[in-house]
Image (cartoon, rainbow, N blue to C red; front, side, top):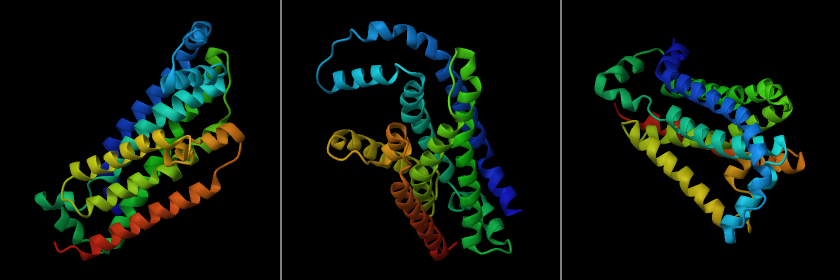
Amino acid sequence: MLWYKAWLETRWRFAIGLAILMLSACGIVFAYPQVARLMPLASNIEARGEIGRRVQEAVQLARDYRGYVWSQWFRQNLIQMWTVFAALLGAGGLLSQTSGGAALYTLSMPASRTRLLGVRAAAGLGELLVLAIAPSLLIPLLSPAVGDSYSVVDVLVHGACLFFGGAVFYALAMLLSTIFPDIWRPLLIALAVAVALAIGEMFVRDVWPYGLFSLMNGETYFRTRHVPWAGLVVTTAAAAALLYGAASSLERRDF
């Protein structure tokens, strides 16, 4: 009953996210032939400063299919949209139901508040795991259509990096949802934190290249074939701590 209720609360957010990500993955694959044809022209682009460096880096990465997929999909499209849906799936919950009386019905169930939140968190994390891996599996499936191939192992590793690294945004949204009685403030605050971290990483990248988003896009694995175990352990522990804080906050609430 609790699992079904958690699914009903989030099913449309999950379904919309899955559809958007799958369409985007298809677009990435089928755009590659056009990108490959533009590579000779892109090599002649002259730009200075940070913008020039980024343009040249993008051109170099796109020279082979694996670099193109990582730079356009795992480092940009997937990570950006997945983070939005992580915050969206984490936002809401028991407090957002108070105005309609649904919270009283939920609390009347023979289950503790910790179990209620635990079931919802587990259901949301399961949906996020699907969003992190399932759309990316279309890339090795469709790559032969454009005359290339992509490793399923790479998809699984990058998906794991995204999921275990980015789960902190989901957990943060859940914690905020035990503080604010609406869905919008937890969502916007979690996204604001994500944007602030992304901007901060851009400025300190040359000094400290081990930011959260670099972990989520699997840059270490892409460049060295080494899985960043230490970073994944830290972010998993941080997400667990945030979820524990959410459970403690919900236990203290007076309905």
